[in-house]
Length: 138
Image 1 (cartoon, helix red, strand yellow):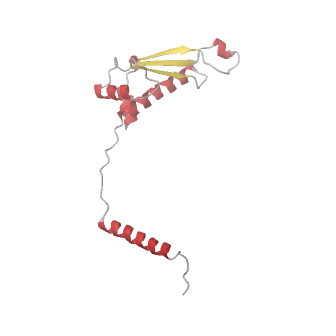
Image 2 (cartoon, one colour):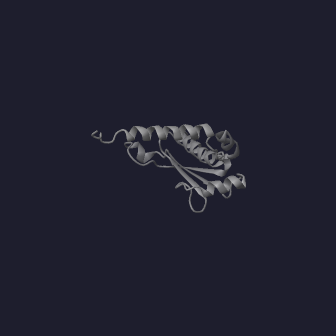
Image 3 (tube, helix red, strand yellow):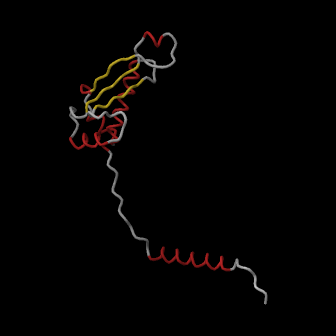
């Protein structure tokens, strides 16, 4: 559900995608073709709800700069389109993670019967261990 929310909240015109040259191995093609993608998304200037912006800015994520700009680099695939799609999916996942609010845990008490079983087990273990002592002469 959070992924669907992120998909509907994110406006593609607020995302800046630029093609860059990929790093690493790839033969001579890597020096000629710009297939990697740099995605930039300004959280503060976006149309996301204020609460979601605050949650995103509070994230301890290395992809979010101090100015509140998300920078994602995608160079996994050899085509520009697939790298663009992968970068957008990572941004959507980041927004979905910020949109997810875990349920608060409610403290519970152990039942009286479970407390009794616990004490009975402890007593039984104590008796077993008491029998492990030295055998007296007599």
